[in-house]
Image 1 (tube, rainbow, N blue to C red):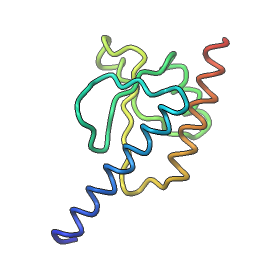
Image 2 (image 1 turned 30 degrees about the horizontal axis):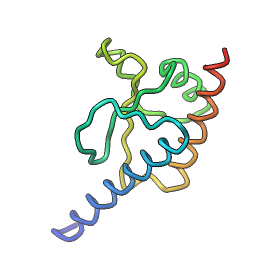
Image 3 (image 1 turned 90 degrees about the vertical axis):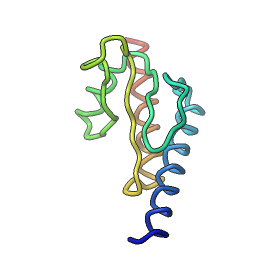
Length: 108
């Protein structure tokens, strides 16, 4: 991969994570839980995160990790990660699915 390749990979990961976060924010899911800089993963607050995550998993959508499992103080938080393997279309699909699921869980 070399020095340039590794740098290009890192830049792509950062761009993907910021792209993901920007789309989530536009969809109303943009509440970062921590104020730290983002590389390729970040924690967002999602109402009814566990229920939304399960529903998405049942539909074959990987929606990060429910952090409440290990950190009870992080209730309704998801850890999302994007890498060079995630396409813009896959990221859009995740945001779309998460938005649809969030609408359903808030009504229920």
